[in-house]
Image (tube, rainbow, N blue to C red; front, top):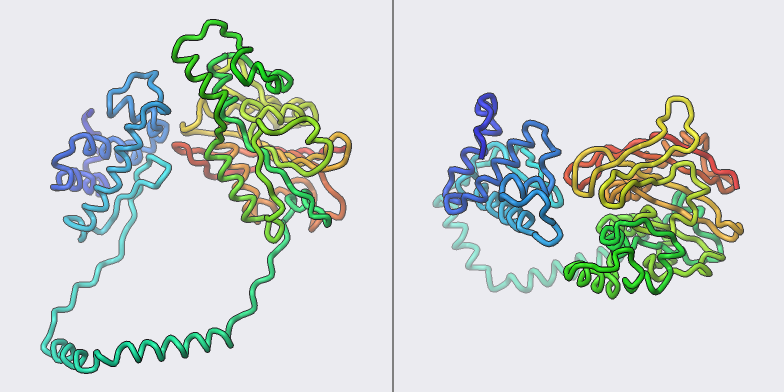
Length: 428
């Protein structure tokens, strides 16, 4: 590990880290000491770009610069062990510390949280001992007393129980997907197998090619002579069905905010959908064309369109096809999922081409953007800001179709601080 900045040594938070790493809980694990010092130093300096799983693996564990965090989980394992060691310290040697060090789940930042002053334990007095003797004298009656209390509270709860809350209908814009006929809303999550196949193939893929059996089986790839490792990967991808954590967050969010209509939501994989399914109905597409090819079916109707150079080597970005005053022509996102910085996403509501249904598209350039789009819609304040940006007041009487570009600040794979950048009203 490199020498610590002298100014940091006077910081009370860093002094706490020094006490922790010098404690008996950390004496047998130099690796965990180095890991905690690295994460704490970068967090205190605000160098969050160095707190991705890949950066930690290279800096602390000496991994090669091109190592795969998918195949090597050593960083995640050690961070889990570090969290346990921190609990052990603050439950033991550090129980009188005035601050607690925490590492949030799903992130690699180090947080310092002040704790309330602990009250000292009251010594056992003679009065307490006499009380204990009295307790033993009526202890045989305790079961009967508890039974009586349970009976009385049960009766009171039955007669005084409040009326159950009435389930709320889905808020705008989700309300546009549901109709009085309770038609199912199909949520189509991304096909991560497809996204990884693109990286192996290093080629963009049209929706038509994606639907061909030869492509899904791995027979129709540009690389006609894959290595043994690539061949095994292609075989695995062609026979499995995977999605992302971001998609799970979006699905969970949609279920939560859909109120009494959530029972009409069904989940489909992009791999299971067929063109005839789009003739009628309501859909939510999660992911961008690079992970959910069905989004490309609607791309020409959107102003903000995903673009990419060399697959797997270039940054993805949104092309602003008709920029307005003050807007940029392109909006570039993160280099890869799990890094820190700005990522972008779009939230789009538009009708099916034949007008017999509606489509909501939540697409991020990386998983952080997609997750941010779903979380954005779960917040009532954000939905109100979106209505104001579109010039909508109250519940619209007629469907209003739109697209909105949002920006989120991601820290080590977790989206945060989302804001609206631009909006467009879509005229069918």
